[in-house]
Length: 321
Image (cartoon, rainbow, N blue to C red):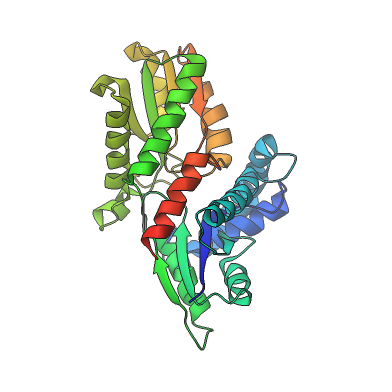
């Protein structure tokens, strides 16, 4: 039985333009897993207010981080796909690796067609979300289900729900922190900033927040940090309802008043650098911190196509064989 791997991430606009961003946000924010308001209420707000006004603003943010090769998320994801394919071959595992995005291109349906054309009969689906959330991982499962609705013969498949506490994931994060500190020196505080979700999601059973805290605890233990040397926060909140706290931006503004003026920031929920890390953390939140009296601010890049990260993916795939 030939096995293939389907790597999945969130997705990205095809270009840093208002038109491309609008198309991307429309697909993203139409997903009921992301915004679960009734469509009669949400669609007029989305199309009448949010998309027309937010798309040009977000396009400018993308322009500030866009790489020569394209969208950072897409460039890194393609590198991860190639690196994982090579690593699997070196491990004597002959498996094609396809890349699909929840929103935008390449899509999950196109990735499945790629695997299907390669004769794959069993699929290992690996959403690149270390911590499970209904708004990310569950959305991938929904997309896969819609693809399978059109198939006469459903392939065998394994779905990797999360890997927030996987030893090699924690070790890879720790190695990236140590390497960073070797270059710039150890900071007063390691701040771990995760993408936020509405608190209501957690109250209704989403384990995301708990898994984020577990990742932080395991990483701090691996690094041998005392309680006062690390902190967990949540970024990227949207709308007026309460999200998981403490908020990253508010924390940035408060830290210098506590005497913490030298920090390193890592974003363990992101498998690849993207707008939320390269603009929101590296630029916007740095401004908050420095304006409040901070003196030294360093962002530790996502694991991206780091060798230890790729080897962790090989381990995850092996476990599902």
